[in-house]
Amino acid sequence: MTATQPTLSIDELRKGLDGRVISPGDSDYDEARMVMAGGIDKHPAAIARVATAQDVARVVTAARDAGVEIAVRSGGHSGAGHSTTDGGVVIDLRDLNDIDLDVGGRRVWAGAGLTAGDVTAAVI
Image (cartoon, rainbow, N blue to C red; front, side, top):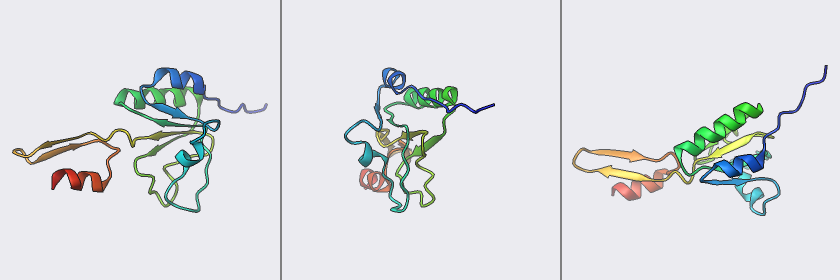
């Protein structure tokens, strides 16, 4: 018995998201797939730049249904390459960058795509 390769429908994924799906045929694919660790050179089937929590749920469901690996990228700084995948889908959180400050309550609600610099600039 031969195992079948999992397949992810990029077109279906694009239809269901508020964010953007980048795939190997797109002009910015090579830039979008890069991570900070220079020795890591993986090629995901898709990079989903999610815009909402619902986008995240849709990508997780689509990847699960297709049987493909998921990698989550917030800043892309994983030295071990955990923020990318070969043949799977990357959930890129960079556009989830809202920040809400409650100065009186001394609280900050920060989106998963924010960098430490973004948060620092907002709270200073």
